[in-house]
Image 1 (tube, rainbow, N blue to C red):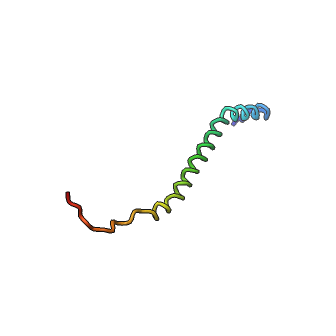
Image 2: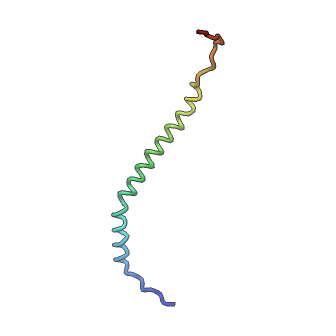
Image 3: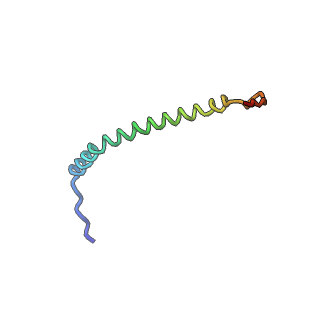
Length: 67
């Protein structure tokens, strides 16, 4: 088995840096989007108990209105 020669560290670091520069906007957008979605989910979860308490009670009068 022949092993390929290892690339020098400078070119590897340069490649990683270039890849990061390309992906950086996408990573930034993903973090912002997850923050917005997480905030919305937390708001919904906080709102659910309040909605359960304010659920409309059953009609108190059992009158039937005929027209």
